Length: 265
Length: 278
Image (tube, chains in turn green, orange):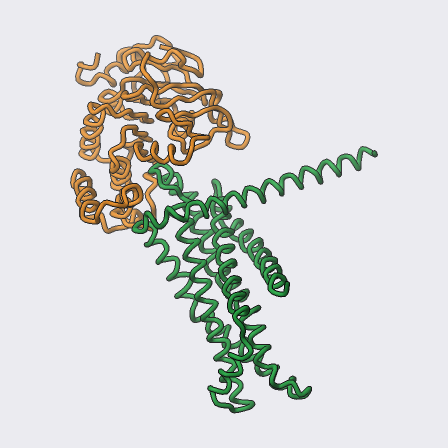
C-alpha cells in the first residue's frame, strides 16, 4: 500500500475512533442523568426550585412565541388546503392534513426548535458560566453532584415543558386554522371539531407526545452536555452554545425521522 | 524533615487524611505539578507555602479531589477520589469543606441559599426551621445576618470570603481545605475565623491550607509544605521548617511571609509572634 494511502487510512481510523469515543461518552452522560433521576424525588426541596424555574423559563415564557407560530402555521395550512384541495374534489382531507402536519409532524419539531433556540442555548451559557466562575467546583466540594442538582431538574423541566408546549401548539395551531377557515368557508365550530376528531387517532396523539418527550430529553441532554464542555475561557461559552445548537438541531431532525418511520412500521 | 524532593514518604508517623501519589498536572504545555507525592497527616493542620504560581492551589484542588490529575493517585479519607464508588465519594464529600480563594459562591442564589443548599441536599429530612436556625447561627458569628437575602455580587470580597467559610463549615466537616482563607477579610473577621479554626483543630479536624498569612501559620500549622515550581521542596513540622538552614527554603518563606524578612531571626519572629510557639 502506498505510504500516502496508509497515512490517510491511519487518520481516518483515528478520527473514527475519536468520534466513537465521543459518542460513547455522550451516551454515558445521558445514562448518568437517568441514573440520578430517582435521587431528585428523594431531595425534592432542593431540586424543586430549579425545576420550577426551568419550567417557568422554558414553558411559560415561551407561550407567546409558540402561540404566534402555531396560529400562523395553522392559518397557512388552511389557506393552502382550502384553495387547492376543492379543485381536486378532496376538500374533506383538510382535517387529515391538519392532523398530520400540526399534530404529528410540525407541532413537536417546531416547538422543539423554539425551545432549543430559547432555552437550550440559555442552559449551555448558564452552565458554561458556572464552570468559568468555579461554581461547579463548589458543587463538587460540597458533595452536591452537579448532574443531580443542575442537570436532572433541567432535564425534567425541559421534557415536561416540551410536552405541555406541544399540546399548547396543537391547540393554537388547530384553533388558528379554524379562524382562518371562517374567511373562506364559514362553518360552525362543532362541525370543525367533529371533522378533526374524526381525523385524529390515538396513534397520532401517542406519536406526538412521544416525540415531544424525546425531543425535550434530547434538548436538555445536549445543552447541558455542551455547557460542561466549557473549560477555562469565556470565549468557549459562545463556541459551545453554537455547537450545542448545531448538534441539537441535527439530532432533533434525525430523531424526528426515526420516530416518523417507527410510526409507519 | 524531608527536603528538596517532590515526595514526603517519611511523613511524620500518623495516618494520612489525604494521600497523593506521583501527581502530575499539565495545563496545556505547562507542567503545574511535577510528580508530587505527599501524605497529609490525619487530625493535623498542614499549610502549603510557596511563591505565586508554584502550584499550591493546584495541589490543594487535587488533594480535595476537585481537579483530576493527569497522572497519579488521590486517596481522601481512605476513598479513591478518582475511581471510588459514587456513594463512598458522596459520603466522603459530606464530611469535607472547601474555602475557595475567590469564594466560589453560587452567583444566582442568595447568600442564604448558598448556605442552605448543602444542608437541604444532604439532609432532606431536616425541616426548614432547623435549617434556618443553623444558618442564622453561623451568619451571626460574623455579623452577616442582614446580608443573607442578597446575592454574592452585591457583597465585598471579604464578606464573600466569610460566607464561603461559613458554607465550608455548615456541614461540620472533619476535613477542611482552605485556599487563602483570610485574603480580603478584615482583622475582626480573621480573628473570628481563627477562633473557629482553633476550635475545629482541637476537635480533631484535619486541615490542609494554602496561605501567605503569618498569623494563621503561627496559630494553626502543625506541618508546613514548601513548594517551588510545581515541586514539593520541604515537608516538616512548623518548627523544623521555620528553623531550616536551607537558603532556598528560607528565601521562599521570607518571600511568602514578609518581604522584609531577610535574615535568620525574621522568619522565626514572624511565625512566633508571642514567643510561645516552640
